[in-house]
Length: 277
Image (tube, rainbow, N blue to C red):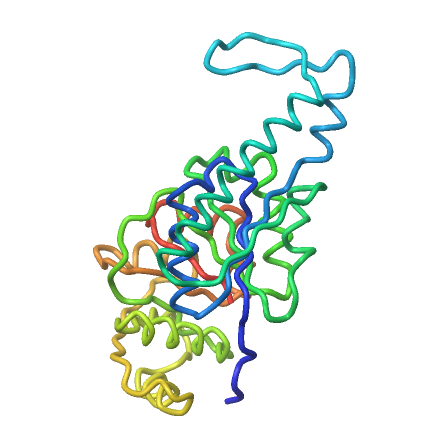
């Protein structure tokens, strides 16, 4: 097996309402484990600004629930205040964990900006909405589709993380060198074991995973295995059952074959990050 390219930077999409304190903290934890810089990207929605400039545009204001005219100047101010608040959160979390951070504000299409900015040493991070509607409608599904079909690994963060301890679970499929290396690296960095989820058919064995860990310089990594009924999002949920995993690692080919909501739903319902490699 060949060594996988070294990742350098985690790009976090800060444009969704769910990307608040818990999402930023979860991204910072993964960046620390993988020794990555964390770059927060806040996208000012260009289409929304164009809409606000139209004389007939209206918006529902909270908490009054009153319909008012949209104003481009007020929207720009709102964007600025939100970006400043998220920047403070990002810098505070990264400083506490001792990892390098950066912050960028860009204007454009929220669904395409993040994946369009990534390089070969980057990982993308999106916060998966908690509701089925949020995962199916709006900017998130378009951003998820763009990220999934990019070259970069994609980290789906849960809207509310459940734990920071537990084994790293990885589907033991064929041809998963990059996926296996990343799962082993995360398990070793966290001081946890690796749980191989075995779907029907051939795949990586416990012995091969242990030998791979030694070969890439990670030393001894505890490896266990658990069967899957089927290689689907539902099959993984059922296979994990009462396991208290810290993170799930999937091959990109598997995530693409799931329904559009499969991997994001897994992150939201298990309340753990799902890393697609």
